[in-house]
Image (cartoon, rainbow, N blue to C red; front, side):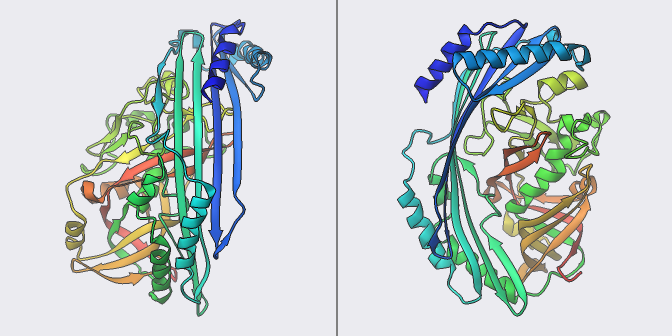
Length: 481
């Protein structure tokens, strides 16, 4: 791909621009998917998607145009269309783009193990087949699948002000899902939810998460759920494990803090936010134990990068510190509109979409409690792991979430496995009831490749790292409530 990128750079420098500033953002991404379902290898799937977005600032306005024609003529045509749009919309622009700094970032970024040789299709089918055979271990197991999606991508960002950034990514996203059925009841257990086990880097991450042997382990847990009683209802303490914490962070912190949503841009599709601009610097979002960071610098996390898609350098920033709301998730454009400091999170899911404010890695910083200490401190509660359902209102305030796996905690000890554990609450009240935060030994680095937002829709990769956490006075109920 490097010689191809040099050709794009050469073409870019030959383009005839008529605006005050212009940029090119190239995305070149390949994907492969392998799966074994009920011991039957499924056909492999592969794809490649390559194209560029040209953006122009002219007469105080901004315009963009995308193309898959990466010849000099194709890029020039897209640049000309973008210039026309910039001029045509200048009088209706929310801001004067001539007042903004002209991005000129220079640098590189690479995922861990970016140049290590990848596995062959045969390698993947052997591993997935072994996990599939182990999962189909009982007549009550009625469906099961082991699968993986791998992606490699190169992002190139060039600007008329001298910007030149190359970012290379490698993603591995494995999954094991098992469904058991008996006596009219069906239970599904998965490995960290659907594609929740997702990181940058190579196949080494499989060892870190114990993927070998996961088939039989997940099948055994699905059978335990069949025999388990429903989660009891009541107001109790809840210990959320990291694979559920990532969903809690994503929905009730990440989305509410997106600045374009706060400004009203997303109300037609993804909703608004209960957060308002006057809350930053003064609003207590959670207990003093709540420390949330925007951190695209953690190498293995799913949405790490050196520069966002508008050329802003990425760095770790606190969004919430000791429970107090400090900073929104807003890129350079939203920061200019709102007059507040944000972060480098202007991101697009592909070459044919414009960058908008998106989560990248939104993490809950670890505390000082071990998992054993957290369990021992609960008189009556429920441990929950692995999200199975989610519902949250348009302002990202009132929510109801369900998990695959529950286990009662009674007098400081883990006891009965329970199925269909659910809980509900209101975002700020819930986070203010954060009572204990797990230490570094409880942290998992997870993510999702399927965060949706924008018109037209964009589905993007997001990372979350979190320890296990204890919340007090939570409304819990089971499947028969």
